Image (tube, rainbow, N blue to C red; front, side, top):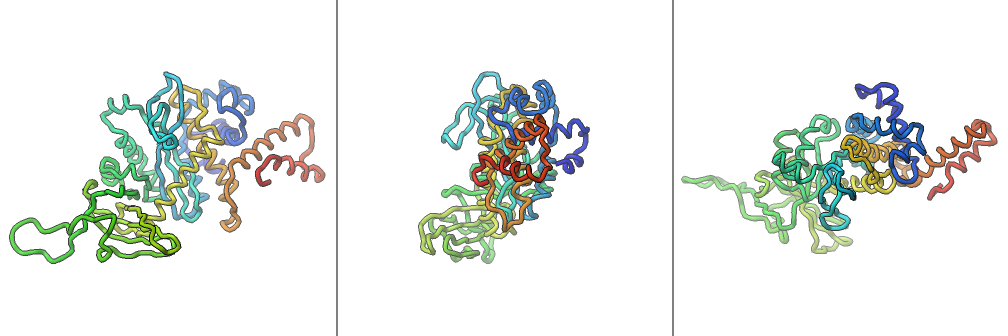
Length: 399
């Protein structure tokens, strides 16, 4: 971490030491992630934590450098909002947001999460979390929720381009209000998914008819339940899927798109199920469109791990700066744990990433250091090393 922190401008030594300390603490702490809880387990007092959380830190650049160092070159950017439960009346941006778990809009907070997914590594690392404004603030700005999401990408276009040119989002974002501004104001390309009743048209490629009038552009509507396979190109077939490719016209998006029509098979037999994926990059291979969209789901595991193990939903502050620091520290701690305990191994030696084991190990180390310092035990003695290792592995799911 020290090497990466040295690349970020404006950080003095005490601030660098605090950033390292807080990330390790988030991987060690038990109980609620409050300032008082941090004082109990950490090396700073409660007031210091409050003051440090008010200061800004470039989490986006830190995580970009971390991901470039530990993920392969084949990467995509994933974006997805995540609901955070929150009660009270005075928390900034408290409103009703969509909860995928509950299947309805409920009172709480929302963050827009940016992550980077390593296609060859089959895992994701966080980039930045940005709190979503409530409806009142959006109305004052004259924005819709989708406008806000698009603006997040546009404002960070230069940094995101360091990671990848492809932004992968779920089907909710297949709207002109998102794809139009992102493609027009950046050089990023979007990969997403259409609804099964999407309004799509075949492009006309035949000879131009003589006479007056506008040249024929379209060759009929695409019936997604039964596509005209003479106009599609079969790109890939195995026992699970058939992938068909086509450049077509998306009526609602008012643009050409690169379509990947996927038929799902069961041991090579048709099931009647299909999905329609697309990219704004007309040169991207249809197999990669499907692979990128599947890989997008890795960002959900980041949210899951941060909520379960690094206190993403625990922040009790009502200051937006402190909340922003907490959300990003929680997610960044997951990324640092992956980099240190999973991605540093050779691909063939990776058996799966368990943040529960990582947290157990860090907590055991925290308690062990306390005992060693208070009882003046030398950890470097040969007879102590095996015993210390057993203590560090105590409580792990697979020690």
